[in-house]
Every structure is written in C-alpha cells, then in structure tokens.
Image (cartoon, rainbow, N blue to C red):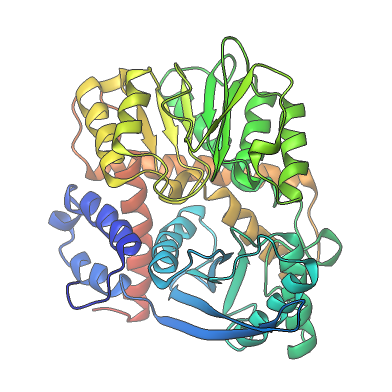
Length: 451
C-alpha cells in the first residue's frame, strides 16, 4: 500500500484480517483465495461530496460527506452513517471493510458499506442538525435505495437524525421505502433495534461462558467502556442476567466502582437521560460507590473482573491495558465497539490463549460479537419489505439465534483451519475472520468478481 494515501485505521483492519488468514491453513487448502483477498480489499465504489448548510447565524458552513460502498456480493450495501469531526476516508474504509465480514456472519443478505461526514453535532442546535441532515441526504440520496444501499445510524446519528434524513429522502425521491434503518417505530422501525448491539454482545458472550465451562452471567464482575447506546443496553442486560457492572466511560473519563460498589440500573437510566441531552459523564453524580476518573479509560482501574466489554470506539484497549486485564484475572473480552482493541492488545490475548489453554483470557472480535446491531437492521429491512412489524419477542428470539450462529460459525471454522493443542480454546478472531471472508469470497467468485 506504499503508493496509497496514509490510511492507518484501514491498514490496521486489513492487517488484522490478513494476519489471521495467513496464520491458518486456509491459503494452503485454497490458494485461489489469495486472489479474492486482493479484490475484496478494494471498495467497489467510494463517493465523496461536499455538504453546504446554514448555521443559526445565517453563515454558510461546509463539510465533507462520504459513502464507501465496499462490497455487495451478499446483498445491498449495509452500514452506518457517522457524524464526528474525526471522520475521514481511512476510518470509513476500516469500518466498511469490517462491515463486509460482520454482515456475512449474521447470515442475512447484506453487503458492507459505511459513510458519514466530518460534522460535529456537539454544540449544534436542533435546527442546525436538521439543516445539516437535509443537505447531507440530498447528496447521499442519489446513491442509495432499498435494493442498493441501506445506511443506518452510528456515532452522532440517532433516531432524530435518521428521521430528518428519511424525511428528506421521502420528499426528494417521492418514495417511501426501507432506505434507512433505525427508523421510528411508527414509520417502519423495528422493535429491539436500539438495544440490539448491546443485547447481542451479551448473548454472544453467554455462549463463550458456556463453552469455556464458566457457567452463566450470575455473579460475574463486568467492566464496560462507553456510555452510549451499546454500553447502556449491554450493561442493563448484564444486570438483568445477574452480573455486576463496575464501570462506564466516555471520551472525557471513566466512572469506576470502588470497594463493593457497582453500577445500578437506576444509574444507567440517569446516564441515558444525561447522554440524550448530549452532556458529559462527568456531570453525573452517583449515589453509590462510584468515582469519576478524568481522562482515563477504565481497564487499569477496575481491579479484578471476569468480563471486559469495550463499547466505546476503535483502539480503546492498548497493549498495556490488555496486560492489566490479564494480570487482574479477566477471562473473557468481547468487542462491542468496532476494532476496540489494538493489534498489540489482540496479540496479548491470543498469546495468553495459546499458552495458558483453558484458563486463559478468551477474546472475541467486534465483527462477530457486536453483529447484533446490524442483524436487527437486517431484520428491519425484512419487515419493511413485507410491510409488517414483528413483536419484541419475535425480534429478540431471532437476535439470539443469529448471535448463537455467529459464535458457533467462528468456533467451528477455527477448529477447521487453525491448529490447536489439547485443551486450547479456539481462536474466535481467526475463526470469525475466516468464516466471514470465505462466505463473501465464494459469493464473489460465483458472481464472476474474481477468477
């Protein structure tokens, strides 16, 4: 990639996939897949456009908008829209690349894509958000559709923003179709969608616990980072299943339990209200034994935990933090965020898994562990196509089945392609990468995308 622009996030995602493919028997058994890797690593299409909008003072503002349509071998492009000042092509290519294989692991008919803009919603009025969303969708609407590309929400894009964008598409294109997911329940949205990523993460880890002989969630101490949608619902589901949650965080610091303290459901509901008003976690005054640590992530401060769930953003667990989790006896780590762990952190976890066998920490990558969100987006697409709505129980049951299948697909694929010694837990990162890659590569081959 030396002749290409510097794209560190995308290169990291690419190297993580390639490392696991190379360190398996996949290419020995199927050398033709090296050709597939070269093809799948380049997006089918990258769309970049300017977004011109007016602030409340009447001043012209301009942002960069993007949509990376990475791969459509399994279905329409599917992936979120992110509004954040850090958004650039490298981040969106990394997210879109991950999305290809994540969507494959759901078993649903969805390709991979990602998009967004370097717009910062923080500090903007509702009217400014609306004007930006209208301007953004007027450009994006030329390139998407229910059978072409179906974006969803991501960081900075919640129900309000999806509503503004959907309304713009409906008016400008004169179509009421399932062109976005995460919609309101009265106009095509699916029950369980807000909860899906967090719930799905917990369902996935339930299978890790069971397979490793660690029982269920009852009595487990759980460290969680983030305090947005994924972290909130993962925490609530953990508490519901009998676990003790000992941390949450945001970009400015962490809320960590001390002594025998823990995060309660009431804490989470209050934090939900705080975050809905776009306020920092530091503004929350806990009633229990919780302390706020400014400028810190929770991993080195939580002490002994059984499970760690990174649910904030990319690269939020470093090599040193991974070593701290291992030293404190953490047995399971699963990413609720995309690429939540650095390559060095993953190496720490995988080395431990190989050397300490069944007693080691067991790592699950985001493309498998957090696929529940996009899975329910896929279920929303199905409901839209049928012009009907399923019950909460129906959607939740389908989500549980999808997460179970994603776990066992990765587990069994690792057993097939990765050498293991007696008593060693299978590599979920290798198994998930290989399973997702093979499914997409085979579809591309049958379509004539490579030969």
